[in-house]
Length: 371
Image (cartoon, rainbow, N blue to C red; front, side):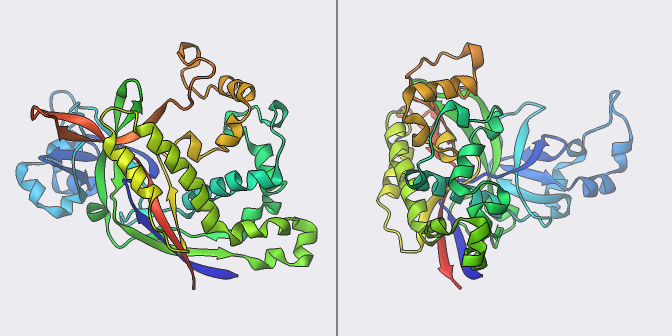
């Protein structure tokens, strides 16, 4: 086994979902410019009044708190900077993944998935899989499975990335020090921000997470190759950093061009411009993880759009425009037509605070060094 130290540094807000939707009053409360995540068991233990119905219903855990309670840290799992924009009684907040001690971490599966996408995109020209409708699975979730098997191996046991092992990466800080409230919205070039905002817990920029990465070299012996037959692609793993860098740089250039055409998104376009010119070390690469990565960061991307007619059939068959019969997209229109962005209140020339696109989601710097 070849062992490596993996370091992941966040460059923009990063959200990897825990599969949990937090509810105002039940799971969190807002006070001033902070969001308080309740320790519900502790709140109920110290406030027996929850057993008494008020106005025909029992109070929510957050309704039991007094102003004085907000000074008692034992009643809260953590406190975050920022607050959801929605003031509605049923406001929701998407939880970020954490360990049992409320420490946010980066799952190895998420990192490996992003690496796999980069290897698939860069390896396409070597394997040259034939793309036609017969290669696509009927299920939208598994549409590219046959193409993936041509690239990586005929089944999971013979998959090249069976040799790549990526562990979870942990940071030094608990949720209160490492998470922020991110207000996200969908952007289009023609309309700017549109649709309902999405409130998220997100790992803040400028945090470092560390873990381990390994390559099982026993799977590349002549004996193993008689069964697995992926020795001819071992150089994909040997060239992991350059290949990830190539994929990310191509995406960064496209995103820079796209955001330059969105009113008020100059800051994001400049962010991508700076990344495109970043001086990286030989063991470093940029990568995008988690929520908001977008279609181009989770698919074969340009290899699907090379045949315009086939790609339009793919968009139609799998309803990739997500609007079905109500879609206004016409064949040949750019795809995708939207991106997700972190929003922030900024003052315009008249001094009025308005929402502006502030940052993309999920960009990190990865560094892989031999142990």
